[in-house]
Image (cartoon, rainbow, N blue to C red; front, side, top):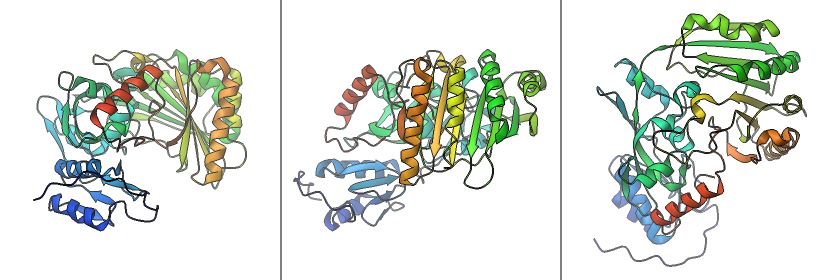
Length: 428
């Protein structure tokens, strides 16, 4: 086989044309495994890690941008790793997880060995997205982030090299991948430490939208005093149809029967319309069904939620647009320094606020304005942290802008592993 010629600068193709011209598409197909496919000259459905290597090597030689996803994008080759979904659990207490696997698959596989994983916020989220974003899950205040439990990451970097990063092997990449976003490469597999299985106490309290002010006032007094083995989230929702609602979810890792005492102060302050208190396996992390819209989000990290901030959070539901405002208690093990440092964003915040609106352009613009107004009303409670805008509606509150020193370190790492800059902006 003759060598691939060096890249030759070409005009940027129009957005409606395939990223790969026919000759390069044919060349790439010849390098893919039998189970892989190149769809419409732009989306590669990878069947093996070698397929990902083939894509990035060809793209690097010809200056073609690469993004990870499932749908075509303008002027980029998209790598779809959905098929890399295998999960195996070691008797030694860890799991190897393919890039396409979601947490439910891992939890089901681990349960057979009496083990559980420290997950991201949703059991439906891909494991690799929790790892690259940080992974603030329901038990994060007790056990830390999902990314804190990573043993190894296998990733194809922009230079087309499949690398295995661990605390001792390619340690700088191991630092950056965990919490640094998806721009450092296409992850093909991760390995995670697991924990012994144990039941969780859970509670879900629901209120009508008219009780939102009273619930939020009571929650902001009750939540900060909770011990690290208890986590809680409050959601204000304005659905496209129906009335606004309020939901408070609580998870604790102590004795399941302690639930009544955990939630009593909040329940006594404002009686819920409906409530459910019980015991779940740690793998049962179903989110509250509160009509969350699909769109983009803005987020804020806070040191506290003052009364004025609570009022501003209520105003964020105004305007008649579908919107979902979440206030999540952080602290506890979220703020502890992990045994192996990572690029995860600010861990010292006490609370996270996420504003998610609909996906139409006017709704996205309104979401940004809403978050900026909320930040202005919160003032010093933000600790000087700026809002992070236009993120995909991801459950990970720490997948946000990093401090300047961390950004500089990530940029240096990217320059070393992606010399052709084909992955730039991949995590945006």
